[in-house]
Length: 134
Image (cartoon, rainbow, N blue to C red; front, top):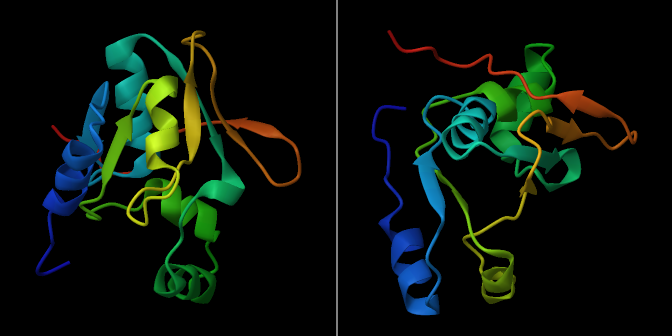
């Protein structure tokens, strides 16, 4: 929080792999909020998978101590300075072995489909509950 680290290492790795993102944004306002920004800007939808969301152990513990869902914390917490980006399906294979990249879902052609697929098999609408700028 006091000394955020940008992620130029991810950008360098993408360059080394020859991967050109089709869209990229930092998740400082919350993951769900930024996914919705990408959807709106690109006029597409998104399907995220709960079991794919990377949740740091400390985030998990803090959320449970505060009686919050760790998934809610992961989707709506901010100030992470991680990068959210999309790539063409043909470039996805290049990223599969990257330790710095986690695939959390995919974009869809239907701009109305903006959902989180839960471990229970349900699809819930993505909602931005993070920071809203002026």
